[in-house]
Image 1 (tube, helix red, strand yellow):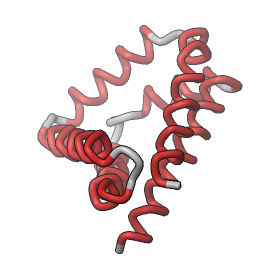
Image 2 (spheres, one colour):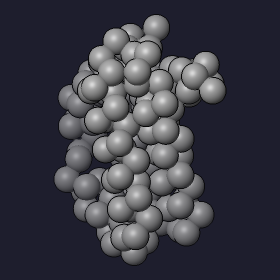
Image 3 (cartoon, helix red, strand yellow):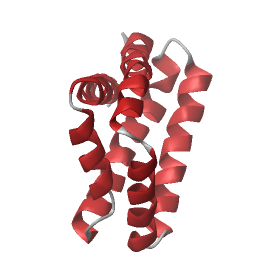
Length: 128
């Protein structure tokens, strides 16, 4: 179970790196993707469930990571916020993602991309 959790966390880090690259090289595509968050029942609940998988992996692997307390807090935070999103009506979640996409212009995605890349690398560093 620990080995599976470790690889789930590594894959999550790689996912974040890919998102960072998307934000850097295709910010309009990243913005379009953000607009889709919560747009249908399937997308809404698949997205939330997808968040819960790495959160569980982070919690399970936290004792073996480089920063166990930070990892545990982060994992529980991800899991709790995912639980809250299950309770928020889908239309409110979608409206929030649409307004966030309106605020985040493509330039802002490019400016934020190094943080996302760095965060992905940090997640992997903590488990390897």
